[in-house]
Image 1: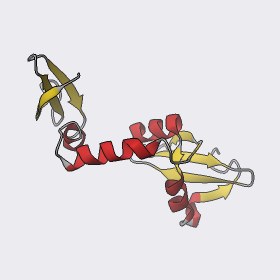
Image 2: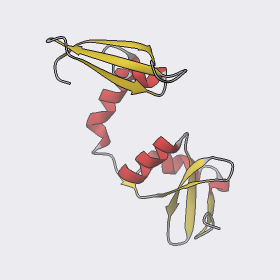
Image 3: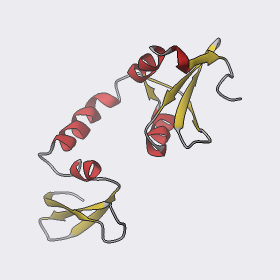
Image 4: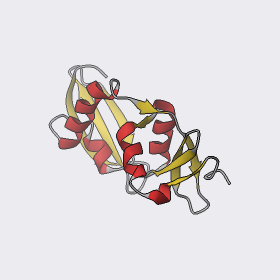
Length: 131
């Protein structure tokens, strides 16, 4: 929707504990965007901290290097990415399936890989996370 004049957050009309953002343009046309949580809803409202974070990263995200990864879900339900290297594999746990899908589509941020290297438990020989 272009030329949004008003954005409001309300509880979801369809799902308990979820939210919706209602965007209204100058002509009075409304668009409803379902959101999983309040933080996601706030990212659509100009002037919030979440909105600033989303829009400040948009310009730099494309210029930062990323690393290809493959994704998995453990039997306990933990989502994680694996960066495969010639001599080792590095496991990076992530918050949810959506984060993992984003990493698999756009690549894993280099800084995230470096954070995983700090814990030796995240590093195994090649193929070690696939067994």
